[in-house]
Image (cartoon, rainbow, N blue to C red; front, side):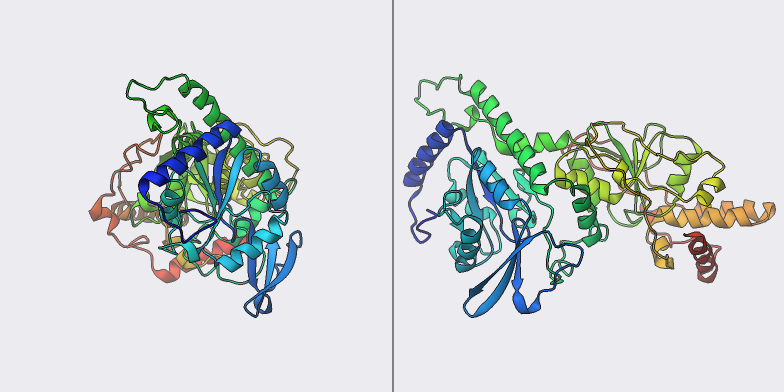
Length: 483
């Protein structure tokens, strides 16, 4: 298939000839291929009559256009045009969108009015045999040089887990609610996380981080290519441009680079992963492994990070009591590392307890809470108030996670008499989940966690000797201490 003539289909031999010529041109110009999405990646568009901007975000340029009698508002992600201009020196730009062809060309005319960046390299759902899946189009447009392709999209699901996809932080400007209602948001990833990451990037453009990553990938590819180029074709006359064994692959480069972001980090989660269910299906666990971190079940002396949902839990108490030099951060830190493609400073995302909670632990609370164990810090961070404001808790918040349940159990033990305490501990130990501690995982291909003990994981949530009313009493007690 050819971008300019979407209805034109050629046979495989002709496609290889075209692909060979394209590869030679790319190598000559020292460029790679960037396939970029439009909606929520470069722009956010919606029907004008239904749009309402977030009050806190007035930084984007907004334009209006009309298609088939419908008026649309389009917000352009800050820094977009400058990003595309700079990137064109390193990549041949292509647009793949699930929007219609008319819609795509309207957006391109706004982003690239001179038609010198993207030209006619646009692929829409009107040109696709499977409109909901973009991965099928890669092999059709790039039959011989898909090893030179990088994809940039706010959705990974339409690419079926391809390793050369740069998952972009969604750009949401209009309050249209469609993203909030989608399955792409998880319990721990929401609008607040997006705004927190945007706040971290407030002194620069989010595209500056993407540009730095993409230029790095380009440098790695062509440095490897210079080595591979010295390999001569064998006596069968194989063209080295078409022999994959003689060419670096962007899938491998991106996968390896990402796996080094949290290398040497040893992470444990608290209040993030439900007690029931397979941890290896959890989104946050998979992100941590993808970034090269080791994920542990329990708090140990060599833990470098405790990632919490913003609740004072048993694991947090253990770290403070044992003076373990670990960074206690919110889940936003992990997502920021993921979407910015680097190990970002923990300072901006650290979770601090109020002093009354710290005094209950009978330890001196470290006020600055800065620990940099495994990676460079982002330079020039401004001083900000990093205290996480906690919302009032409800009973379900605690019962959703085994670690939180045990925290309530400890609260009960501290308030009972010595005789009652012994029986309470004995009863509660029988209901604890005894699944094995997580294996240390250094890369994505390693074995995942051992499955939990099925008999223990099926036990009912909450201490067996505490009624729901009593649990709620402790919840109210905690809420009364929240500033």
